[in-house]
Length: 557
Image (tube, rainbow, N blue to C red; front, top):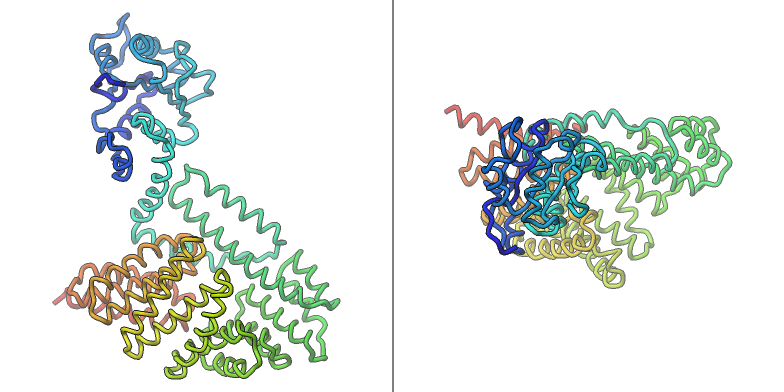
């Protein structure tokens, strides 16, 4: 339209719908148009302040519109009609529509339905080509549709960004309070695991239901968080069940089949009862597999002591690569470094294929580093790197992440041996590989990108490059704060690490106030972790607690 208007819209409504009309006007006029949108559409203003005319007087006795309203209608580019049963019978809504239509096209009339069915709440004088928006399906979406129309830009350009920003605002708004809620929910989840072993199909149905609910635009931040945590608990149970089923599939004995049927119907407890009701004296391959299966069932029950006992029984009878490596992974998760080391050294003497050999060497390097046998760690990493480089060239999709991990592990080792330039070089190689993978599949690989960010932050902190260290830590924290919403159990330790390290950097830069805030957030997370697993996290908790106490002590002086 070439005419210059004072208002982008005139708001027509029954005064019984005043509350909604006031809300709509305020939301439109307080909307800040994103800079990215203004770059794409240079004609857009920065905001929509004073762009909507809304008459606040109750019209009762007059037979015609006032001159003020007529002037406002003439000065308005568009008409927004709030539709409801009250609007249908309002003669003033009707008069405003009729007057507006005398000098404007119908396509510049928009209707917002706030109450009732569309066929019952549209004033009769409206044409058939008006833009109808149903606020009953979600006020936020209705608002964005109206704003997009007022700005003459595609709805999708605003809505996609609005959804992303809404998630960020929700998380930031909750701040530390959100972390407290997160901790409480996480703790509850540990004691609210699925105890019945429903078939996988039932898990799929539950997960699909939760995923459907999460797509609703009307959910509040705390509702989204609770649903995401429940969904993650189901995903973890599904992963454990699939691991257990894999080992059921390796056993074709009548006892295993009987236990499998009970497992599908009733769960891990009943399956264990069947497996333990008939003890086999024959120590053969099936005996070993049966005991690893029992270990998997005990892991489902979170009974790691019993799981360890059955792993030991299995590898005593059959110490092949598959059984031993499964046990090694279990031991490393349980921080049993010395025990894992003995088994890895045994595995390294086996005649293995390239993938198996690279896996063992990489794990050996990790354990040697933990045991401070650094020369041996480097030798293992270098051998693993050679194998994984060749494997990644042959099959990039399968092996590039493994290659990135070996580069990462070398970077950690070189930092420990104070070979900082070498550490920087290999850490950046891991970083680039992970960024490429994340471009292809963000959901699967974004976390690994944050691992490189954190490690580079630590490296540059050690190199006294405060600016680059802060940048990498802040990037890692930003992403990990988003990730933790979907999986607290997995991402809580890593977020706590990044918070603690950035706080330490701030202390060295005499930024005590910023350091205190980050330390306190890390303290909350590590307190929860240490409660769940004291052996793994008590040392970290004590480190953060002392850091907080030191800052508080300096404030008291």
